[in-house]
Length: 80
Image (cartoon, rainbow, N blue to C red; front, side, top):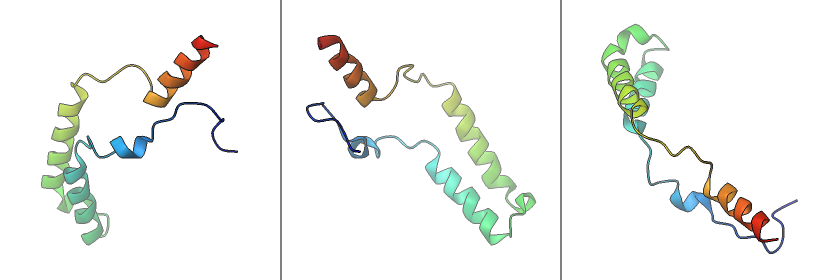
């Protein structure tokens, strides 16, 4: 059920807090939506801030390869 014995594993939860772009903007938009009973016309400012943040993140270069555990598994396959 769990991991295979003898494989290398890194807990991704340790690195989960490193980068969470637009979290503050998302939370303020969702809180505004909750306060206004899901009517987004009252939350135009928060919506604009969130869309600006998301647009800024779209231009940033992301790593094209998968998670670190995937890369470790791939390397271990090559050693056998």
